[in-house]
Length: 132
Image (cartoon, rainbow, N blue to C red; front, side, top):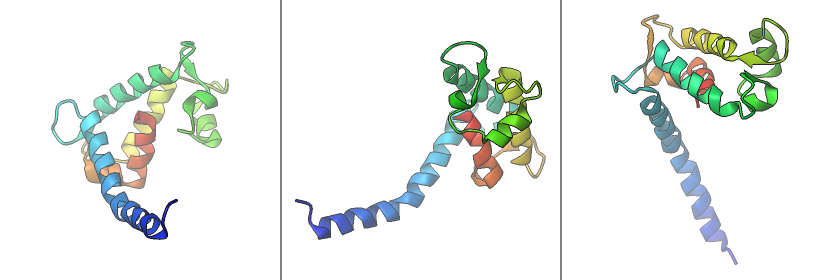
């Protein structure tokens, strides 16, 4: 049987370690998206990661992603806005257009790269949902 003391200790450790785990996840994301190891992600690197993910999310290999295949990466409203032909799916080009839009939103200094701080922002986290 689980004691109350053990349960309280486990809960306390989870609460205290959550910020460190979140930070390490963001650093891991930067490392994963930064093959040239310059400490930043540029648009080409983001689009390459997005294209790789698109291929993984398209199990039927029809060249499109529907809401189910997107697995919550876009809301229904965002999907509708990103779908110019209104067929309920995104092609790779349409998906990459959303990635570019979110990349630009996460790059307030317009230097063409995203550092760890920019990836932590709300816009950066929205971009990361499309890349991993």
